[in-house]
Image (cartoon, rainbow, N blue to C red; front, side):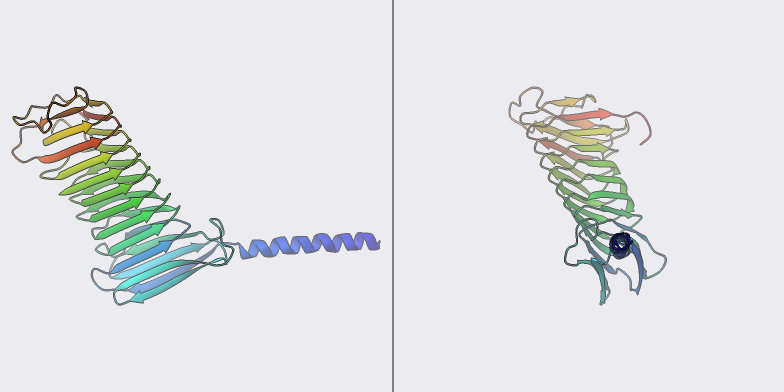
Amino acid sequence: MSGRTVQFVAVGGAMAVTLLTGILLAETRKEFHFAVGPKAGLSVNNPYGSVSVRPSSGNVVIINASVASDRVEVDDSLVGNRVEIQSHLMAGADPQSGRVDYEILAPADSSITLHSSSGTLHAERLHGDITLEGAAATVDVRDLSGAHVHVKTLNGPVTLTNVQDGHVEVDSLSGNVSLNSVTGPLVQVISTSGGISYIGDFGDRGDYRLTSHSGDIEAIVPDSVSADVSARSIRGEVHDDIHLQPKQHLPYNSPIEGRAFWGTMGRASISSIVVLRSFSGKIHLSKHAGKQ
């Protein structure tokens, strides 16, 4: 009988430890409210987890945080007109126990900086200065107008959708970058080995520069597009399915056939400048007859 009793206590103790651990690692939710003025600032530094920002109604920042365990805390502060949020990792925190997922509402004209090492960074329907940085973070930006967008990642994929009249700069080491209906006075993507995809009409009077050292570049444009285009790959192939109208002055001296093309699309007097560059990747320019 005593042996059974000891065995029961031991098992019960193990169950208690497991239960206690489960409680410590249980997810909790926290909410923060900040009253701010026009053109407020918002900074979120989140080592593990996602950050999503959408517009609020009025001059208020509302932050909902899902905290994975007691091994991470949310430090918050309001300095002047700037809200600062930091996921503070405690001893022993790892990507699972140190995870915090943020859902944020902020004024549409806010200046926003988001950082996450591995979570998704999402911003939509804003028109301020937006900076998104991460190592393996997935970046998803959509439905912006008149915003300045700065993205810097190592190997996370980057997707920008319906960004109108924006100043866009994307810097990626190896992640693929996809631009769909992205226009503005400056659209610049630089990647070391990731591929770059552009689907859209290159807007009016914009400067579009897509550069990848070894990744492929593909641009798909509608029949109505008007742009001056030059493309060159030092060691890769280039393909032009549009039959560009030749320009009088060539940008290169005796280029190797199949490695460069240049010319104009459309007949409008107002057109954008499009520069496609790769060292060893392929470049492909084609038309899409459907609605973009």
